[in-house]
Image (cartoon, rainbow, N blue to C red; front, side, top):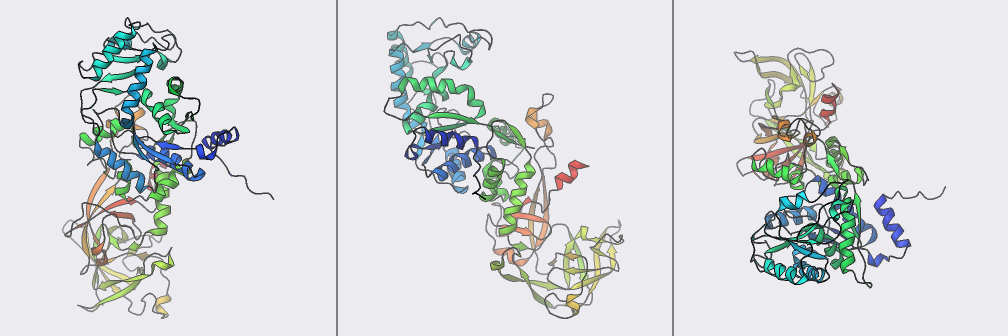
Length: 560
């Protein structure tokens, strides 16, 4: 048997072919180029993992470059959040760059194009230019300003730069081909006038370059070998190459743009505009709301960097867009947290149980494993007293033989504790059960080695001691939208599919050892799911976010 052939994605095949055709590994350089106009989301995570993963695979540098050419929407807050997210995912960039680093060089190159007759200042309104654009099957109409003299274009462009013209009064356009079948080649805009302060250059500039003019030239300046974009930029590749044709020198590496498909996540939206709408309308509590698909929201909810990287690896890189079920992301969260999260006792919907034959005032400390998946995690002790809380759903006054939890006359084992038997229950005036009276078998203590301790019962319940329990706020999260693809429906706005039950806040009781937890700590509440300590926690009250349940409950719901 020969060695297994490593499976490569199509981007890696492209790089391998380039290496065979003359590229050297020393020439490889990648980049992740987000615009700082919002927080990164799960879609960006795939791009981050692709670019930085290639850097690791080929031992090549990866730049973090901020595409900061629109001061009207970009803020330093977003720059800081993006850097924090990339670092949290476990990646390190080679150099931190900004498109604004190249404003002067881009301007100088634009001047060259004007002098070569390849760019002109258009003084029409945006509506007039749009009306001349044509259609995919009909050629466009040339602007009446297309044949301005080089001198007039230079004078106007300089005046634009110096702030002498109002926003919308002039733009600089590349002179390419108004009959091209690719509408992006029909004299695209290179610069527009914007009288807005930039988060880095302040008011130094009154004109700002457009994405298509900036992107490829920035790749060239940085000597990026492979510029990897999502599929919506496939039609931009011809323009990317045309702009490079104007500046590339023969002795320098020419960047190559290639595209991969965006992967959309079900039951959410990833458009920055729509995410901003959710934030500004108060539907969610900020960009890092745990219901948001942002990396900061997933981090706050309790997802691990490893789970997100594994998710990105699983869905892979493809040439066609498709919808990925959010349950796959949740699966990877469970897989990772199962290995690393300590097990703790937390009761979310408490029902009081009194052990009637347990001595009043007595308490004892029982040994319990921190994580059965990790022997090195060790053990801790939890207190037991006469009064305990269990989950309300773990008791029924009457039940059939398939109900293996607590019922009148039935026995269960308390996790790491004793076998108890339900004898009776107390109800309020409305018939709701408010207390269960049980007896316990004092010889059945787990791990004691007695014959009774080895006795088998079918149910094991988690619990907390009433006397020692800490009150905590628990936030239970569900999918933000009821439809798997809320932003692709033609009959309704995506906001019409908001899930009214996406957040439920309850009061729970947890074991006393959790008093020292810190923000971001992750743990498994036994039998209930994985939880994370929220930044809203105070010394008076801990706040937990539910990350994900122990099983995929949505699969069961949707199959009914």
